[in-house]
Image (cartoon, rainbow, N blue to C red; front, side, top):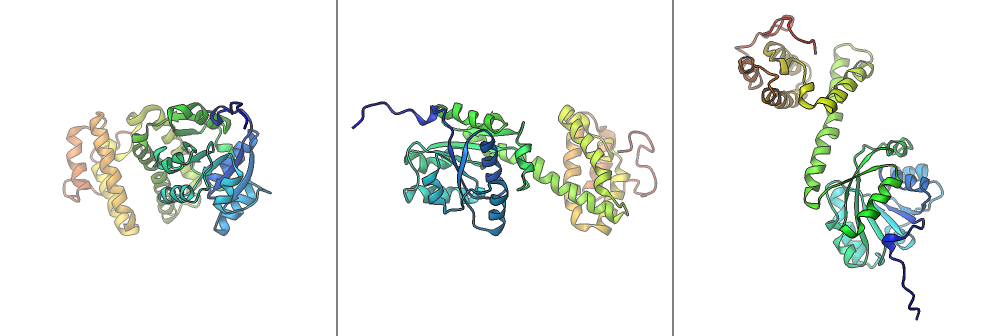
Length: 321
């Protein structure tokens, strides 16, 4: 029996055989990015026709095999399944003996940290949580978007360098997230990104209903500027009738939405209330204008000037946003 010391897998510089369990939108893109860094995708698992097509598009010639076979072939395994499916998948792989000692096991869930991989850790795997803060399309453009993308990284201290190195190889920027902070971190990203898609889609539908032929072209510059301003200035970037205290304008909005798109009213009111709270807290909304505005948002329009064609409480003063 050889007594030569075996290299610690956490320190190995060699290129890795990469496997993907769950060929959704994320896994194939990450594997393709690692391939550009010199690693070698060797196996991928996928159930639906869509996942198989994605795997074929981003990882051509990489065989489709069952999950246990992916783990048998790979040194680095990407577990890219929905959040709710992850704990059961990890437990199942560990119980069936599919996990090998020294194998890097990486999940991409935003919700979970490294502890969800504890069953695999007990089987000798090296657990990493690498969550790309990016929205994915399932097409090759995703690989390009990883350049400069932040990753929420959680791992045992001894694997921190290995985790950060993998992120950097994919062109990303590692951001360390404590285990207990993962749910809050993920909620923050979902609030900003997922709800943004809903808001933009609703806005485009309303513009089409108002007769705008190219709502995407109209919204593009406006939303791009708003996002840039928000990232640069935070709440100081707030504009529009709520931040100005134009209760009459807001009342007109609500009336039009109730008539033409009642399904959007609850979201409009909720976001308007949140905006009013932030505008008040930061001194943008004058307290003397807030009472009528908050009354409108509570369903009381009697104190507001609600003529859709006329000015709000401040007349024509202020910006037009």
